[in-house]
Length: 454
Image 1 (tube, rainbow, N blue to C red):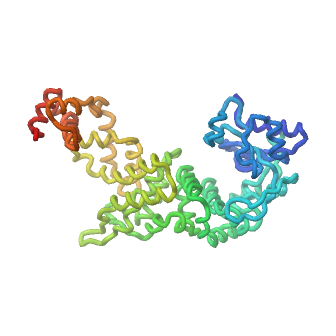
Image 2 (cartoon, rainbow, N blue to C red):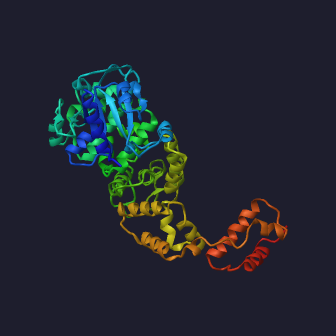
Image 3 (cartoon, rainbow, N blue to C red):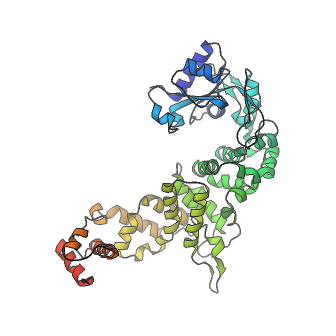
């Protein structure tokens, strides 16, 4: 099975054999020049979408109106997955026709696309110089009409042409500039950054899903702290996530948080995120203390945040809904926020409570968040080590014992189905988890004693 690079090279060779121009472009050209393995491969050509689809019959014109067709890598993807939009970009090579865009009324998509035969025109409408180079994968030759190689060497993110015009065309580029600068540890060129700050409020023109995806990439690409500092400095944080911006200057009790305010603490968590990192864990780290700013108060003994977990869960839910997270991801993010303070009591928990806590779905993310929280504040990992040891030493059959009784057993001795069933069965399970009930007979005797028939 061909690799994505081999497949892209084959596409370029085939297009050239038919008399067309064709090059690698965008992020893959940039990454190859940086000696990085590209996440995916894109090709640009002067062949029209119809001509590309004629040359490569197994194509999918998912963006033909913008000059884009997808050519699947042989042996990967399927008609069903492609038609449903479910195929990963790692299974296809995107082939785009040279084009020159006109106005962008919606701040995201061109009103009209004009195909071109000139690669200079195609490059001129792209976002940043470091993404504006074209590469011949056969000879290694680079076509650089915008100074991309110079900016790569200088570690600079710079728009192609006028920054306000580039950002005005596609407001998502405001976030992409932050992400690229953070990922590569580059500086954003002065006029580019000035335009970002000026246009930050226009990020609301971008779909919430797109904003979510860019923020998720910032959180999981290994430089989340740097990304969020840039978001804050540019004014984009206040626009995209005002709840996080509100953490700035919110003091914490120094005996528990010697590192500083809630924003500083949260940035430390982001800095310590593992890489690679599950998106839900990253968002859980970002939002775990989101309820602190509105619950801040100075008590006689110390600074307090009464009820910040409950408030934080509600706020996190609003954020997840606003950014249109899936139900599954929302559930996990909210669970992380909801349970992050429970580790403080883990050594005092009843055995049944502890086992139920340890067997929560994706508990490894809860454990990871707690470790990040400790590392970014007081540094005491005793509760983390205790939970990790228990998790490793309690046998699965003790963590999740087979039920001793069920609803049918209760009905058989005269109990009527209803809300009381759940209470009874939960009490029996607690008895099992605490090794007080070992058999069905013991369980039934316990039920008759503690829950007499009414």
